[in-house]
Image 1 (cartoon, rainbow, N blue to C red):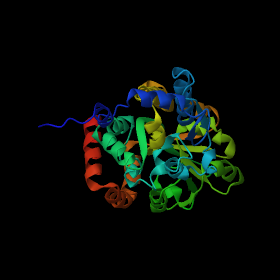
Image 2: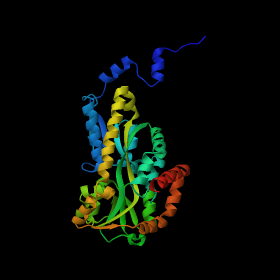
Image 3: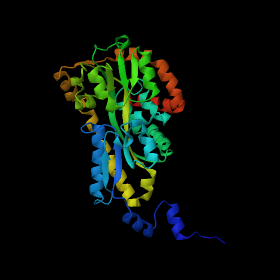
Image 4: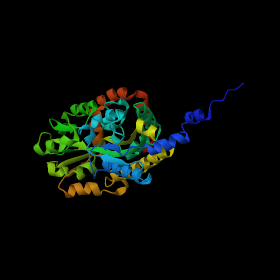
Length: 345
C-alpha cells in the first residue's frame, strides 16, 4: 500500500508556500528592508542599487519597502563587512562588488586575476555562462541568495606622478587598493607600494598626497572628480574587472511569498542590465568614447595601452596569476579561460 503525504507537505516540498502562509507573510512584511551598497550616486554600481530598490517598492505597491543605505554606512563604511552583516541580518539586500567579498569567498577572486578577462567580451563570457552559475552556487552556500550579475567596470589606474605605460613606471608609487591580498601582490610585483583603505578614506588620502594613485573604473573616476585630487594621469589597461552582484539575504527571501520572490528577482535583473549599460558608457565600446574624452577635457593625460604594452604587465604579474588561480580553483579558472578564448576569437 502506498502512503501519500499530506497535500501541505507536497506543496512545501515543491518550494511553494501554502495559501495561509502567503497571507500571513504578506501581512507580516517589515516596514523597511535595508539595501547596502558601497559608494553613492551617481556611479553606476550605486545607481543600480537605487533603481532596484525603487522598482521593488513601486511594483509591490509599497508592500516591500526598500531603502538604500549608500556608502556601506550600515557597516561603518567598511565595504568588506557587508557579506558578514547580511548573514547576521543587519542587511537585507545588497549590491556587492566582487572585490569586497573576495576575501570571504575565494572564488570571487577570479575577476581579479591580472589580465585574464581582457575586455567586456571576456567579462560577459564569465557572467553569462557556466562560470557565472558556478559562482552563484558558491555564494548561495553563504546564506545569501544571488539574483543577478551587474558590473562596476574594468579598473583603470590613475596617479599624480607620471604616465604609466610600463611596469617600471609604477616603481615606488603608493597605490591604494580596496580589499584582497591579491591586489597587494599585483602591485608589489610591479614595484609599487600598495596600501589598502576603504573608499571613504580614499578621497582625503588623494587630496593630501598620502597615496599617489588608485585603481577604479572610469565612471567612478569622473563621478568623484578625481581629476581635482591631483590625479592627472590615467592608464587604460583593463587589468582586472569589478563585477557587481545583486543579493538578497536568505532570511528575507524565505519570508517572501513566491510571487514576491519572483518580483524581487525580476527587478534585480532589470536594474542590473541598466547598470551594466551605464558602467560601459563612453569607454570605447561601440565607438562611444565620451567618458575618455571627458577625462581629456578635464586635463587628464589618458594613456590607452596597446596589446603589447598590456602583455608586459601580464608577464610581470604572471606569478601572482598562477598562485591565485590555485586559490580560486584551477578547474574553475580553466573553464573561465576557455570561455574567454571562445568569446574573443
